Image (tube, rainbow, N blue to C red; front, top):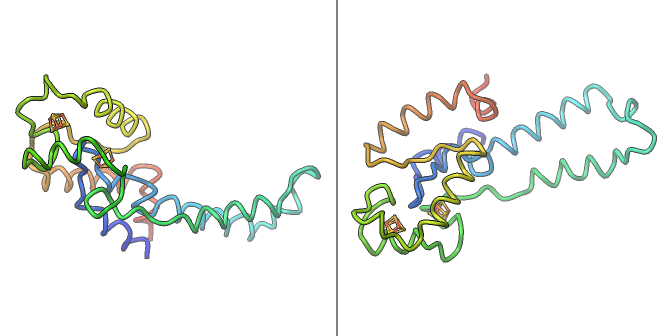
Length: 157
Ligand code: SF4
Ligand code: SF4
C-alpha cells in the first residue's frame, strides 16, 4: 500500500516544478507515519501516562481521522489546485513545466509561481526549476528520499 502511493506520484512533476513524489500527503508518508505512531502509543499504553486533562480519546480520533485523508493523486492526474494558472499557461504553450518556458521574465504568474515553489521547498519538497532531464532528476531525488526524514519511512523494511 505504502509503495503503491509513492509509485502513483513518483513520475509526476507539476507544471510549476513541484515533484509530487516528494509530497508527504500524496506519497503516503503522512498516513504511514500516523499509523506507526498510533501503533507505538497503543503498544506502550500511553493513555495511562497522559495528563488528566488530556483528552486521549479525542487525540485517538484525530490520528484515525488523519489516516482517512484521501491520498492526492498528483498534479498530472487531477490533484493540486483547481484552475491552476501555471497548469493552463504551460499547457497552452505546449511545455511540460515552467522551467521550459521561453518567456519567464514576462510571466504574469510569477508571484504565485514563486510562492508555490518557495512554499514547497520550505516544506521539504523537491522542485524542478531548471530545464533538465526529468527522468534523471527523479532517479536522483528518489535516492535522496530513501535516506531523508520523513519520507524514508516509506522504504523501511
Ligand atoms: S501549483 Fe499548479 S502546477 Fe503546481 S503542483 Fe499545484 S496544481 Fe500543479
Ligand atoms: S509564462 Fe509563467 S506560468 Fe506560463 S509557462 Fe512561463 S513561467 Fe510558467
